[in-house]
Length: 243
Ligand code: ZN
Image (cartoon, rainbow, N blue to C red; front, side, top):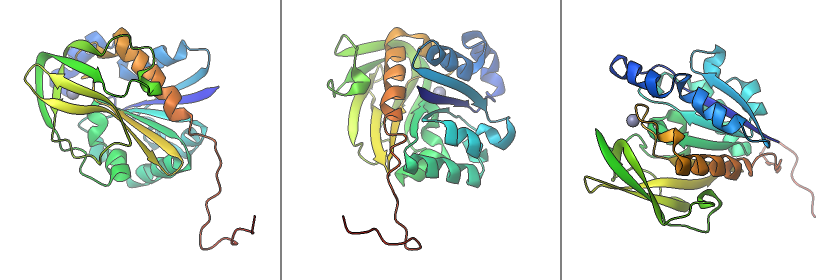
């Protein structure tokens, strides 16, 4: 079984709160937990920023094989020691799936070493085409066409300040002509990180069939790096023996 911790900031901006409630009555974490919870190989817990330890306790992170993370405008409020704890767990092998506005999250910037909050954006009602550019990748499994269309989403575009992905799985084109590296994988320590850009909170993106396929694939791909238990030799420990 794969343990999935779904985490949401859960404090929409006042102007978006009602729209979001209409699209996601149980919150984004509720919709994602429902999606993952229907799978027989996934154990799911949902947490929000208002929980003790901001929903990111050492115990929860130790339990998680993969953390699915949706943050937005309040990314600066995540405590330094929670960023440290997530960082440590990713290096130990916990998978991390970052969604949409979590591009700005402190944990993503920490793992990437760049100003990941920096990208072009427009809030509008325009379509996005999500192109598969690595069809053999496990996260693209089950997608039947070269691209799928999200009828309405926020537009994100380049330049997006990320290191070049280890695997670039999706590239999005937008109605306005923007492009974005929108489905990106990195390996950090023993952990796997996937960023997926689609999913502005006032559009029902996470109910769309193709997006759900991507999310399920992403969770299983990211979790596959967990529990490898590879030793880490520090200067303070005994040196490894000759093999
Ligand atoms: Zn958004």
